[in-house]
Image (cartoon, rainbow, N blue to C red; front, side, top):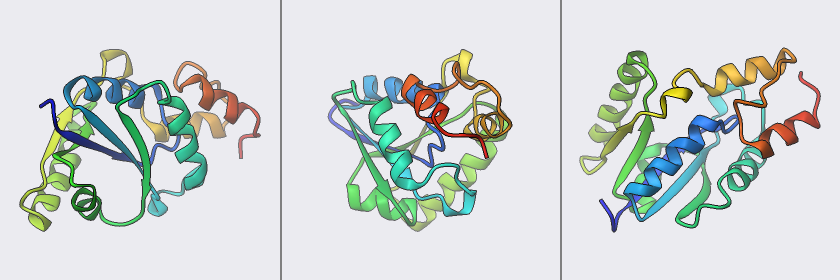
Length: 161
């Protein structure tokens, strides 16, 4: 699929080592990867959009073919606006597939050109989910092995709420 651009959307609240792994995998397949940080107002984010955008940029800073943007609205509209080839979604378990399949089919209903590619993370990240990381952080647990160094350092400066 070289020569094409992939869009990898998510709230990235916070970005985890699993997200980074997926971006590395995607960048081996596509010439360009646009990581789109969603406003995610429906998810009660730990970090605001600007903080998440900055942390994602820093965590992925060494990857030349990766661009980090923000968006607010329907994913299908971002897909059209960016003129990308596919949207990337990570799958950790069968439960992820069921949810992601529904979303992919709905997006295809809204735009027949909408294509989704599902990728699995490295097996060492199969359990990793931003919601779990947030909960561990909020309860005062150590998330150092779960997130990129820049995220751990930044969050360590704040007190869990």
